[in-house]
Image (cartoon, rainbow, N blue to C red; front, side, top):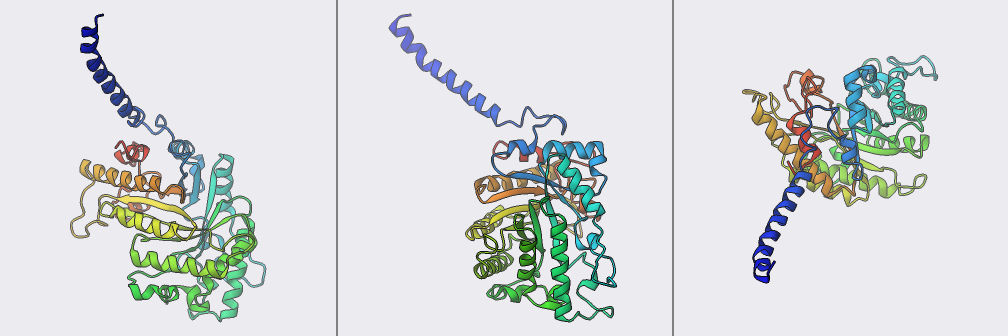
Amino acid sequence: MGNKAFSYFLPRLCVILFVILCVGLLACNTPEGDPDTWDTARPLHDIYRNNFLVGNIVRDTNCFNHATRSGILRRHYNTVTAENHMKPDFIAPSSRPANDTWVYRFSSADTIVNAALNAGMKVVGHTLVWHSQTPAWLTRQNNGSPLDKDTALANLEKYVTEVVTHFKGRLIEWDVANEIFRDGLSGTDTIDWRNALRMNDSGWNTAIGPEYVELAFYYARLADPEVKLIYNDYSLNNEFKARAVYNMVKDINARYPNVMGRPLIDGIGMQSHHRIFTIPRSVEDSIVLFSSLGVEIAITELDITAAGRLLDQSNPPPWNETAAQRQAEQYAAMFKIFLKYQSHINRVTFWGLDDGTHWRTLDGSGAHGTLLDRNFNLKPAFFAVMNPYGF
């Protein structure tokens, strides 16, 4: 080939090679050839194996015996949380014990934990101290009035200590305290985090006072020094609730800087029950705020509402292709943020395997908040999570 011919073809050859390279890069960003089913899609936990754990919930003790649900869990997730069976209503004695020997109801929780461990999965405990789903006798007298402080403190120490001890060595984290702050906070409420606590609807706070929070963490640390201790709450993309949580964790860890080798509170759990109207920047701002504390961040209960009466009580929007697309776009936006701050995020847990058993479906809200429809088909949201930058 002569010099003129070479100089003519070389620029065109470079253009062709550049186009081939671009096509190849785009192909790499395409979700695994758009798999048709959950059992052919690349496992989500494998996609994020270098970023963070990927989890989901177990609704009942038969989940690992259900071929499809067990298959989905095992293929796509490496971490599980019991949706209900480790809450005080399910574990504590249902009525006030006659003596100091409490007969706990561990059977269902043990079934879930052991099945998960046998499947090679990690387990998160959820939750020890909560204003809801907790037997009233732990904090109140038979007539409904608060217990005296000493009795409530003794109940708190005994319950947290004995439950954490029972599961010692089998869990990676405990949601120690859950949803302790009330809604509708303002800036002045968060100056002292104690002023932002739930009042009459929290039996622990009513009987003991604000110190119940740090004591719950303290008793848990003594019972199992290895398990990570998490504070968990919803709406933590709200700037005022986020600031209350920030001030609480900062204060407690400053006063308990070295409890058996580390600060008392290991991390903050952002529940992340979002809607398609959630502003992703608000989530990012809270992650930045919490990461400045030097604690881990867990996304603990992720779902995104895209239809139903949660979006509009008077005129609930239908679940259709438009809703599915908007939900997927919101999932992609969230995972871009999670990846951006992956050095601070240790876990992302979805709160539901499929729309058929999602809590917002079962309560009649019509939210369709998960990655799979009620027939376990992949939704656009699944592909958005597989490849948020290519969606």
